[in-house]
Length: 296
Image 1: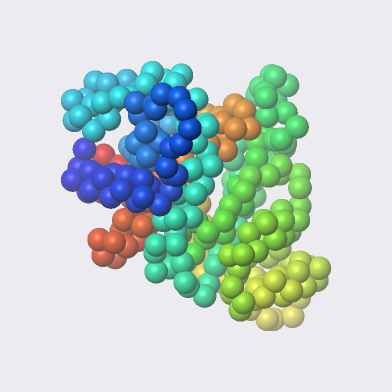
Image 2: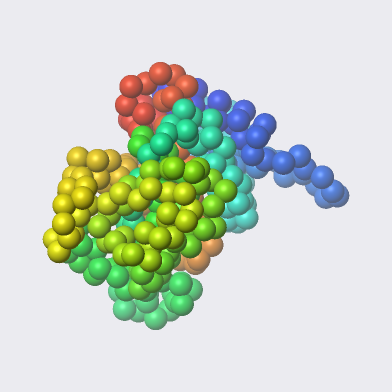
């Protein structure tokens, strides 16, 4: 474990324990591993590149340094069950970290959708518990079809997640993003600038964003007159965020086989990304989305 990772986990635990996890009330025996330790451990798992929970639990138990930090780690089934039940806390932790960064007050938001494959064979599609939630979609960047879900992410310029959701690929992008913005309307500030892909073109969607106080900017389509241009340099920001999720945080290797399982694993990776950006802000690192100091 590097000193940078150790510092991140310690500071993250303090923030989660103070601002995310509510005080425990009611009867019953308190768990040996607290919810604050559980969420901190979940972030460490993703930053260290362990997409398999069984391998992660074995690694913790085999390392004296990790056992000293988390002495009450349960077995893999218990860890898995606790983590799925804490998915609401994972989402709350993302919001808390985002609000503690200067980029939260930026005028510009960026949004895009990226595939989250959940199966590679026809038998998986037939037997999976994700039937009815996942579907077939097309990934234009890789020129391939996939079966799974689609991650819709709205983030700041440095990649800090602001709002997100998972949806069936067959549902229209504008419909999903409109529902996401309406659900999180309290986060939308009047005059907020949101940069989207040209797939979010449409008069109805533009009217909706204007009614919410958003200023929508997107690349011009071929059949339109010049307005914003292709915006390739700025659009590259969200593409690099998606690449960080896929390349460094193994988004496509999440391993979820149920709706709750996929949601939890995606939330884990978004929280790991948010934790790295937040800690880089607090330590003054120039590249805010750099996760290299924490992945070994």
